[in-house]
Length: 571
Image (cartoon, rainbow, N blue to C red; front, side, top):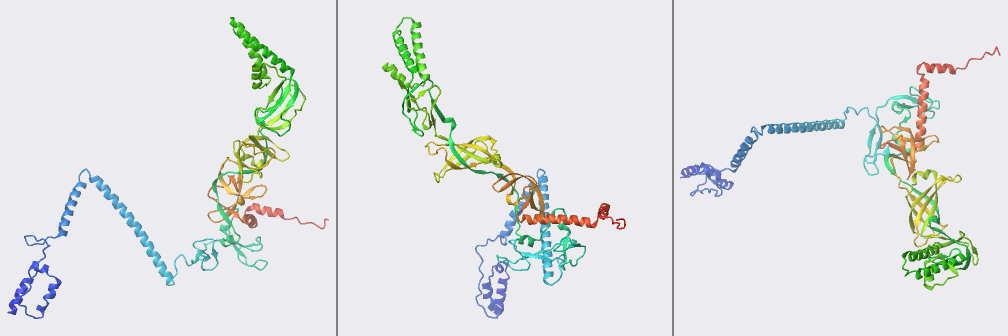
């Protein structure tokens, strides 16, 4: 009975559909069979309802179905790209992809090889083995990785807490040895100086080019060398000077008469009095004015009597005579209101009025009560202060920065905190031989008459003339009296003296006309020390050349320097 049950169970397990449907739980449930236990009613295995089954007995597979679809799409596109029309373009594209992938692979291979080499070198260094190229290098000094100007003789920490990194000495060829205290004491080999000090080496790269010197970075830091890059700059300038306020000469008026007479009454009788336009200045009696008034009244009566004349020529002649006599009164500067009163009242007045033509101040008065006046005699001088002039002096070197139309700013101690804006209207063509200065005139509006003549003012002339070009800081230039020199730091680290031709100076910079290019580095501090060292090095190089006696000319010069021996017997 047990054998039969076992055979039936075995038949059921061997079924392919049921074998795939077995689960771990069922395998655990069937474990008692292996222990020999008897099962009366064996458990039937359940089939999964969500798995589609093909009638032929084979199971449906999603991966196979998806692969079939992709294969169909690949066949379709393969036929499209390999057609006669698209075949050439497809081949070109494949070649380009192939070339690109090869380049990328080659670059990755190089990087990988480099990384492997570096790792091997590090391992050798850790194991105490000598690394090629490192065994002969000596550490010159230690510096901060973030601040190269922070230099020390021994390893340590930077102010930022980072480890100092070493800077190695390059292999340099010694040219000669010299005394540290006497640079003229030179030898070909190391040794001692006459003072007992060790000779120091002078390398070939320190004197490879005449006028160039090399300074140790530690020494550069100790003497406080500072450098700056030369740039193209737009230079402008503000000229500061002192100005004196005065009248605008174009609006100063002289009052005088065009006829002789006597002053009967003065209405403006002191200097400095303010007058408005059309204010009465004085009353004057003149026989010439009285006779002119009489002629005007006769012409007026004659014109009225002939106004209704049947003869047009006669009436027009009377009108012309009236116009002529009125015009004569106007040319004598008789006021219009007096002429109108003469027409209206037909009464001759003894005196006529003289009025002010402008608003201003009386700056000069010559008229007196009862004084006899002649034609052309000056009676008053009146200045209009609505526009004011400011005269200032500038020096010779400031002349290139002054131009007509420039803006000028003025401030006065009389009005703290207030600024007046005007323009440059005139530059004197002549230089003052005593003060060596040039007069510049500026104009300022003065509508409220706050500005008074003879006031002093601080003036700033803002130059609009821009000089664009290479500019060097003022502190970088050494003035020797005969030439201007700057110290240039070359990319190799050497220093050299260079002569310049300078232009205008503004805002702490000189415009460089010749001698420098934008981007070069110049020294702005310790320039005299470097220049002295450069001159000394150049002199030593010349001395070395003469000592070696290169060429026959040097030998000839040495012979000529020998003094002939003196024959004491002949003397």
